[in-house]
Image (cartoon, rainbow, N blue to C red):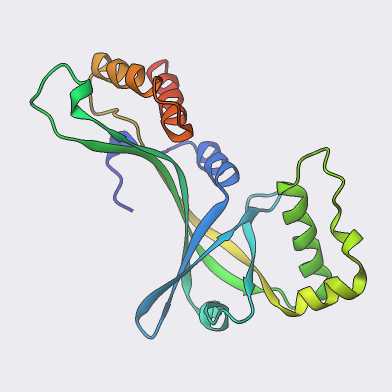
Length: 203
């Protein structure tokens, strides 16, 4: 990933936070010299050394993924920045965003126990704390059928790159102008980018 110095996420804990908060990722590998991708949730293990996920078995990507370096892209908040918000007309539009790239090697989960544990972790991660749903309530027969339809995997993390493009290459006065405009837009991405920009200004 192209990362100018001002935009580089140097704190690993910040990059891991993006992965956890925006865990629906795009996983890239290659087939016959062409890139292929699947969109899927990926969860970090407790030691932050692996990502866990599941392919649908009919998806052919998993069949060749074991002998190559793959790329998982996690997209954080992003939004359009209008030059009309600046103090001058001598400017062009841009886009502010946060993104994390993870490179690694994939190992397929072959054991039923490890696969069911990864299912359980996935459900517990996304279900609300007070949700009555439990995976085991679906019953052994149903879960056995489900496990035949998916291919679990874990991805050993070799390298993490993070980029937070938050107008750091502009003056603090201009950044404040952008923040004020974004705070007036009632959408999640704009609000999150404004919050990140304000936090960055206070450093």
